[in-house]
Image (cartoon, protein in one colour):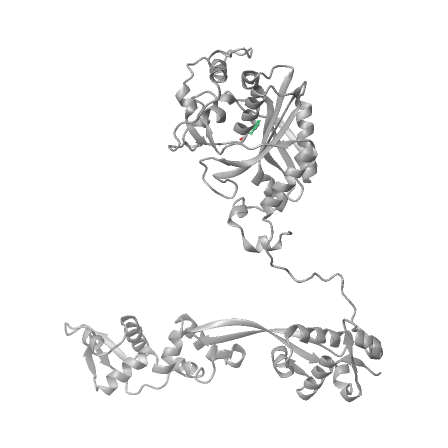
Length: 511
Ligand code: PHE
């Protein structure tokens, strides 16, 4: 059989035939001056024609640490101490004096002393009242450890397989003394099969492959000499590391799209909010625990917020004290204007939807009104993998005549269906400003679990009446955490990822 093979494949065959039919991939790259990808693609051709292949072997290697290298040059500490004693002709010496005379680091000195004792070259005694060292041996042959150390004189790294069993024990000592370090490395060996060994390289024709035709090739007719390289359209392209829109912004834009497609308009409101809009207008009593410092960031600057027209403030005051004209009895306490003027970092975007109710009153708006808000809120929370102190809410309201809970469930189902979560469940919940109230959970099929997304409900008359919204006109309201949605959407387990920005994850995100 005659072969037509690529030039690199023929080159590899030649080298392998010269070198006992097997060569390290690393050496082949050097010898042929090609890169690894080209080599492995040529090896794939060898495999395809049954001419050869590759295998991987794990190599255990060992090399000296810096300390080991130092001892290789200057001798082990025990040898350095011994040489000093011999040179200075000390048969005995006071330990402290010894340490002073010899210019060695304290740690090294004591290692040396303990090893000298272990080798039974010296003994130590306090019998005379002094702490003394005595030379007790006559000759001091090279130890096994020193022999092993010497092996590194001409080698930076040595393969484990070249050591004998006895030497391996000494190597263990080297490792334990942190004088050497083990490595593992994988080597690829390219080899020829029996068929590859027997093929006559001189009879193989060079296969000329091109991936593009040029106009010259066409006009000269040389295209006939080439084979067109097939394209592998299934292979992934190279990873492009270009700047792109942050996944959170993409998600926000997508949520915007969904609300806009459902006929909603976007609203925004201030981050620095009055307690009035954040709490009072939501019928949250002024001693409500959610107002406590541990949840809410109160501000010193600006210290006081501007409230709406006096008659609206009065209407809210009345609902708190006696229910006003909402049909409720209210909370029955003396409502305090100054408490309502306090400034906070808004704890929810519901303050922004209430501002829309105020606008409805002021501008004598017509129903239906459908608005949404995607914005930042703040709570004094301990940050962990499922909590942030600064996060984003996706909030919305519908003001219309005769709307009811089914409309709300329908809206939320439609929203989550468009987000790609077709299964939702609602359960009774509690918020001081809605009645009835619902918790919303969505089903996440990847982990087979229901995840709580946020609250919703129909604003109570105590909330809507001060703004002239009266039965049968009602307000459907909901507020969800954006980051919670994002965790599902992007399949992230740690909520902080969206702001810490793990670069590996960002790189895998689309544009
Ligand atoms: N404001 C609530 C929260 O922050 C969510 C909510 C909004 C509940 C509207 C009911 C109605 O959790």
